[in-house]
Image 1: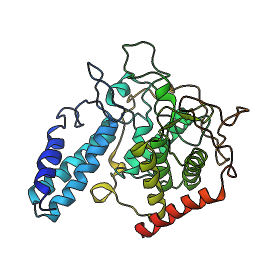
Image 2 (image 1 turned 135 degrees about the vertical axis):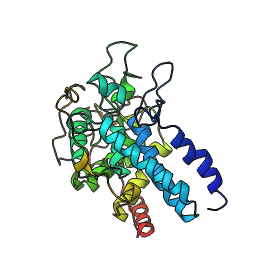
Image 3 (image 1 turned 45 degrees about the vertical axis):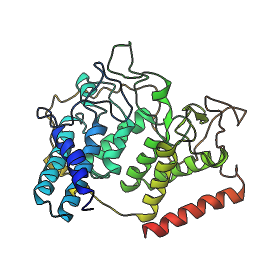
Length: 335
């Protein structure tokens, strides 16, 4: 720790503090998780600020351990300030977190499942009013028709022309993404919706068992088959391992030692439009077993050429036991 702290502090912690925009209180516009390309399309993403805030809170703890009290105080203040700016500037009039500041100001098309990490990283109470409003909006607008998880964002549906605020506006956005689905499962579990969390985990498990244990990056949102890149490490198997570990450990670790105090947050009457604009999907209907598609050919090829999971008995017993062994190992580690 003493050996690495000079690098961590000067090249990560200090850099993040310097990147905070003094006008908005958020991290300066960038490309963020979905790699939105620049040339005028960079913006103030919620995901960038939430990861920076969590990182600064954790860096403050590290600074305290090595006796760097000045940085410990500065990082904690910066992390807490970023979190408050998110609550004040990146939520709509219902307190739901938006994808980014620019789309929120436009008043529509600001839904992005990446914001689940604001609760999975425990910046905000996973059962609080910001979380509940965000879950409701994401369930309503981004629940995948085929699977148990969520689509990436609403850019496919709010993309009227090539020069608007949406960076992609195509099938890559509307696909069901494993990373946001598993992070959403973690947030939902902490928020009390254990049934939905377990349903997402079971869905990803069944899909992977049906496809040679390869955890995908994305599923086709209409029939559940593998789409685009497979296997995927961080956005696939890594996210899956973290979700299993989280379920086994069952611990809480709020950023900077406590959740944001939502009782201090108010909204003026004219804040936002609350426009329900993000596609035609219906809200998630509840605890039924995920249906991976209606195609008569359960091995239909879509993009990545994988199969969909049509039920709990679709795989051999030995494969199921292999995954059970992984889960038990993670439980022991998290105990």
